[in-house]
Image 1: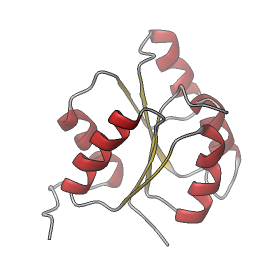
Image 2: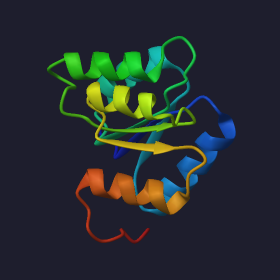
Image 3: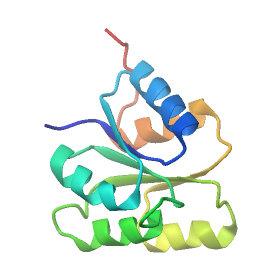
Length: 129
């Protein structure tokens, strides 16, 4: 099974909001709520993009990103880091670990959708059917 976007987010209200806007954009979605579940879900679901929170239970998003980039099978996965940790150091760590995009919370839905659309290589919005 392959999906468009895997969301790794432990805050239920943010997860619900992201799920809603991504489905509205026409993408297939799945989600996990802790860092240990991300790697298994990436291997099982083969998402086109991972939206990754940094502050996750069990394993940080930075640890997850490092493992994804170290594994040849998942190294090419497009990753958007979405975090409340918006300091310059956090952005630098995300870039050094290989994040493809970085957005801080609070965010606008359109910024996140546009970032995912860009990572998916989509120029035009999909129309939900």
